[in-house]
Length: 375
Figure 1 (cartoon, rainbow, N blue to C red):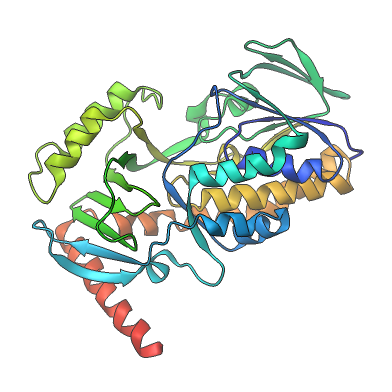
Figure 2 (cartoon, rainbow, N blue to C red; figure 1 turned 30 degrees about the horizontal axis):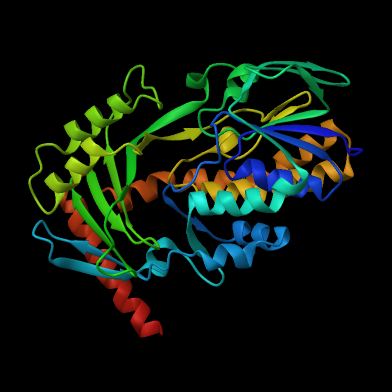
């Protein structure tokens, strides 16, 4: 595709990664983001495999490595806080070589800073309408004046507005996987900056993870789909979390639930899988979680950056139709494997029964012994 104008919806990880790749290939890029400013903080993400390769190709790997959270081990604890089993974090999370673990907000800031000098970023606005034609896409916005672009990319996450406008309602493509996740920062340092603590009861997990200057708290639990669930309804999120954990008086659960009641930066969502028969329609395509998410269990940030590199390369070398077809064929091979592993990951992290928890803990001890013998 001859370098032209590209509109990207979403300034999380996928959007800035694609902006950086496209600008280096001569495209004029605009990124529109609903939030009034770049989102900071957030939960930690593993960057591995193709995600590491993408960071290196973008020239920002060392910057990302410098903000690695430094988690070295994971300790499972009993209801009184005593340890049950301990595992090296790299072993449990499948990390090796140059893989890193960073806060999602830190990763987004690095990609934004690398791309902002020659990319137009528009915050506090969103796409309201899309009309695809043979020579471009006419775009209307919630606030800005209409514009035309040669290509539009929806990199706007699990609850993508671009996907809804082009392909149809969310319920047609997003499948709840029976698990919810809530996260928030704790206003306290961790006892050991290299250790994460995990406490399980059947179908529920609470974990405390290290960060650079404070702890991160996560609730992951099993539950059926909530009718009319709204990912922006914080009051609903609090009610669901408190109902799921409210009867548990063990470990530090009551203390952590007070944090939920007080938090003004609670993140909460369904763990879901996105599945579409095609990611593109005309000159409009999807990237990252908008196209193929297995949220929480699918290496979403790594997949987003790898997909951005694949899409940028394809657009450099072919007409839009051919490029989008090539991008999807190559990147689906990566995301498909992640989707197939999701239920196993859920069973490992949130066993649904006490025997399941006991089996997981015993397996952790065996894995650690095996690792030590092999060393």
